[in-house]
Each structure stands twice: as structure tokens, then as C-alpha cells.
Image 1 (cartoon, helix red, strand yellow):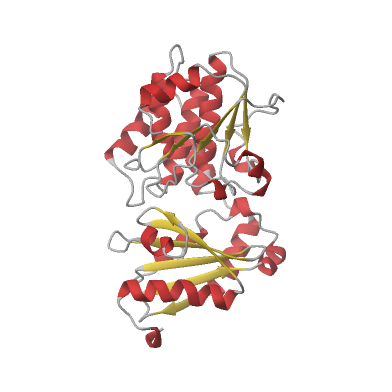
Image 2: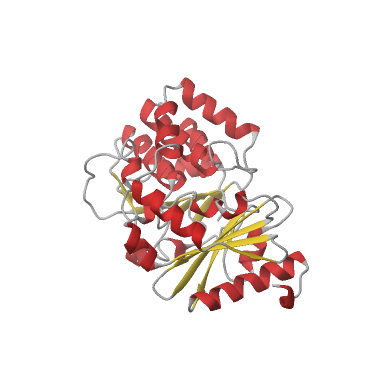
Length: 320
């Protein structure tokens, strides 16, 4: 059932041996939430594990510990996860067993036994500030502040995306006041790029296609491209924003090859509802940033997403 913040904190205070689950290909928000929650609950003397199908990317190493306790969890929490299917196959054993979900996606499927979803927040990490304040006896430390700031800054694109609100800035400001190393975090998240990431950007730009009178830009990433560049999944954050950055483009689509199809990331301005577009293909997300998955080869995936985007923009298929 849907919880209040007070009830959410009561659930956490009354449980022990807690597993906190992140979505697959974890970003700064899901990891920031998970590790912030871990450090809060550890202040209460609880054992907490953070789990991710894809592990923890190197660039977030300032957040996570060298080791975690091993135990069989008695209480399972998912953070920044709108749908159980986003957890990854190694987390299948937790499906149908998640006790609490804390999230900010309007597309949340309410799959957990209990949930706290606040979809007016740009990042789930904004909710974590209130969790910290609501847990009796928990103090906002520098490490927790680092985690929360990371979640807010990454999900707002360093406060550049249209989902950014005054509340986002206010939360970030309070994390800075609490001692978070915002200079280091912003440099690691938004300035430093590996050589393999630069090589991938070059490959991605070479795939650029324009559709519907250049109102839509599409790029793709194949396994061959990953092998040639040596890029890791964790290095590909922000790639999905590249097509939308082009002048005159209303919708940017990025297709990434998976085992049996393509994951599609859509980016748009406020005038286009990306979540509604992706929803027609079984996905979801936010108005300006959403995703879905299409089984089949690249050409089929292109055809599927372009058909829905074209319909949304009022174009006929023959104009593609």
C-alpha cells in the first residue's frame, strides 16, 4: 500500500538485515539513494547490503565501502526502481518479495508490498533527505550528503535538465552545507571522460540519422561498437542526451543492443511526452526522459520507435 513518509521511516526502523536493490546499469540516483540509505540504517545498528545486477561502477567509488556484510536479507527495499523488470536477471529471486519501494517515477508499477513514490521530485535522492530527517537518531554525515548530492546532480544533468526544480537546488544546497565534496563529484560526473568513452562518442555520432524533417535524431550502439572502443556500460551515461542537443531536434532516440533486442532511451523537451511515447512500447519514465525495450534486430527497433514518435509529432510514416 502507499505509505506516508512517517510510515516509510517506521518500516525501516523496525526491520533488520536489509537488502537495498538498485536498477540495472546503475546511475548516480539509484546508487546515491542506496548507499545513503545504507549509511543511515547502519547508524541505527542495522546490517545492510546494497545489491546491483551490474555491480558498482568505478566512478562512484567514493560512495561505496570496500566490503559489505553477508547475510540472508529479511527486508528488501528497492530505490529509484519503477518496475521489477528493471532490476536485472540476477535479481529475479527478489521479484514478488520486495517489501518497500522508494521512488520518484510517475510510471512506478507499485510492485512492492509498500511504496513511497513522490513523482514531483527530479531525483529519488531528494526523497532520501526526508528519510534521513525522519529516521530517529540518524545524522546527516558528509558521506550521506555525498550520496544524496550525487543522485540529485546526476538526475538533473548538473541542474541543466528541465526536470530541475527549486527543491532540487535547495536539497543540493543543504548537502553542500553538510560538507559534501560537490567540486569533486561534479568533476567526476560531468568533466572527466575515459579514452574509450571519447572513442564511443565518435562511433555514436557516425550513426546519426535524422527523421521527420530533422525533428527527430536517432543514434545506436551495437555490441561491435562496444568491443571496438572497449567502453563499459557504466561509461555511457549522458550518451542518450547527445541527439537531443542538436539544434532543431525535438526528440532524440538512442538504441543500445541487448541480448534479444534494443533498449531505447528517449529525450525530449517539455512539449513532447517521452514517457507516453515509451509507454506505448511497454516502457516509461519521465516526461523529458524515458525508455523502453523492443525485441528484434536494429531495423525493427528503429521502425517501432519511429512509428510511435512520428504519430506523436503528427507525421505519417511515409515522411520518415
